[in-house]
Each structure stands twice: as C-alpha cells, then as structure tokens.
Length: 475
Image (cartoon, rainbow, N blue to C red; front, side, top):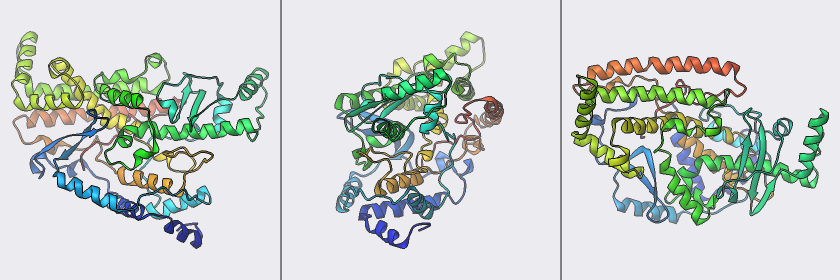
C-alpha cells in the first residue's frame, strides 16, 4: 500500500473480517466498472426497451407500519425466497466491530488512494477552511443555543448568522452535553472589545474538551445527511452507529414524506428569505422556476386544448381525470408520500408542484445534501460514529465509509444531456422534442448567472448550477 510500511499492510489486512473483505472487494469491482466512462443520457434506455415490467416505488419499512418512501428509485418485485437466501448468506459471515487504529491520518489516506485510487467522486461545493477550529474562533461570537429535541442525543448543531459566521455550537457525546466554555466566551468578548489578537491555549483541560466538541460537530454533519438512507435501511449494517429514542424516531419517519408535500421554494427558512447574500435565495428559486416551466409545458402538450381560458382549464382537468395511466401513477405517488389523492393532487397546479418538487429533490437538493465525499477526504474530518476520547476513525470505520462513498457515489447522466430519444414513441413526439430543446436554453442561462454571482459571493455555491447536476436514474 502507498506510503504504508509493509508490516502495517499485513496487520491491516489481518484485522479485516470475512464480511468486511467481501464488502471491500465488491465495492472496488463496482467502482472500477462504473467509472470507466461518464454515462450520458443516451445510455438510458427507453422504458419500452427495458426488460423490467413489474416496477414500483420502493418503501423502506421501519417502526411498525410506518415506512420511508424512496421516490427516485424503482425496483423490480423480487421473490421472497431471494431475501431469505440473502439473509442466510449475511448471517453466515462473521460481522464484528474492530477498534484497530490507524497509525496516522496519512496512513489512512494512503490506504484509500491505493485501494480506490485518488479518483473519488468529485466534490461540488468546497467548504475548505470553514470547518476549522481557528476559523470558528476568529470569526464567531459564541453563546449557548438550544438544539431541537432528538438530534441532541447523538450529535450536534452549529448555528450561523446572516453573514455566514459561526455563532454557536452545542454538542452531545455519550450522554455528555458540551457547549462553548464560559472562559472561551470571555476571551472572545475581551479580545473583540480591545481589538487584540486571540491568544487562546487550546491544550488546557476545559478548552481541549471544546476541541473534541468541534470534532463531534463534524461527525453529526454526515449523520444528518445520511440518516434517511442508512439508519432505517432494512437489514442495514450501518444502523448500529446511531441511536434515537422511539418518539424521536417516529417524528423523523413522519416528517420525511412531508418534505415532498410543500412547494419547493418553501425549503428556504423564513428567516433567510430576505437576506441579500444568501446563495439559495436566488439559485434554488430560479432552478425551481426552470423545472416548473418544463413540467407545466409538457403536461399542457399532452392534456391541453385550444379555446378560451375557461374552456382550456375545464378540458385540461377532464383530460387528466380521464387518463387511467396518469391517475394510477398519481394514486401510487399519493400512497408513497402519505398524500390524499383527491385533496393534494386534484388540481393541475398541485400536480405540477409535486412533480417539480420530486425532480428538484433528486437533482438539485441531492447535489446539495448528497455531497458527502469531502467529509471522508481525511479520517479526522468526519465519521459515522462518535467514540469516546477518539478524534479519528478506526481502521474498520474509515474503510467501510470509503467503501460506501465509492460504491454509491457513481456518476449519473447529466441533467443537461440529450434526452430526446425518450420522447419519440407517441403522437406528442414532435412537440415534446421541441420543448426539450427549448428547455435546455434555460439551465444554460441560469448556469451563467450563477457563475457571475459566485464571483462576488463570500460563500460561493454551485449546488444548483445545472452544469453540475446529474439525473437520478435507477441502475
């Protein structure tokens, strides 16, 4: 292995359980095969050319009768016997926790570069420097902040002011609650008043505990963005790394479908909507407008009609109500998202908003919260579990996390690709293709505008830049 003594190479290999070796091997095969080339829109088959027929929404069953819908994935119905066989195979392999430690961060990075090469999935937004302890101390003024119930039991929360400066951190680890020490607050206040340079000894007992609290905050960042994907996954191996109380877990399950019920623009917090330099205010809303325009015009091609405004509206509603395939799709969508079909998907605007929300979630929002690669560049930046007194991933944890990133962070066809071949099998083909070609101009213009804004932003952001966005397709 690169930059790792041979004796340590053998020691690391010996520490791997049979199950872990199998996972690493399969992840490497998947990674190597999937990243030989960048997939394009033309690689996506037309539905009539695929072999799958009995396709439906995947729901992750959890907590009794509740479930979390996965609406950007379609899975073929499987024989229950296959699930039983999988369970037997998994139960036959030894699975245990190994707290073996890396000799240094460089050793872990060397292992990662050797095993998966240096070509991890590309990072969209660069947060370099903004997670450093020194940055937080130099630019923030801290105070005790209340954390939403549920999250304070396993992680932490960070608070920023409108200028994107860190204003407070509150963290919890192993039942111990940590917040910014009063002595550090006093030092900050005194130095800020006197315009002195900050001279803080972080090795004192109280402040060294604060250094560890900062690391815990980084850990919780990953937990928040992956909890829906991995905490409640059936037969998931990762679920042992987190803990929720039952009522908080129920709250999480109830809130997940609700994110798809609201208009996409409402994702922006009320307190930030009038903040001039908040990047999401413009980027997200304009991206949402582009997608809304596409969805609306496409549905009008299929279900619209000529005539007066009132006549058009009545015929549009009637045409949509009389399409059994559309109604079946909407009924399935309502069931997956805990919606009421007759109430939440009754009008044309309701349908446009819900479809827009889904498209924006699996492209723009997925690009924003799904970018977890930068947390795994270094084994001290982030992990999926908080270990008492430790500020770096164990060998097992870092290997499994790198495996997760490399085997799931596979490239998808770009949103701004040529998708015309998917619209050539019906009588609406000519109009649909013309609409798609016209649509491509809007995201291109939006990308140019976002580049201009980023030139003057204190915190450049490209998460809603259509140039970076990939489609979400089943693989």
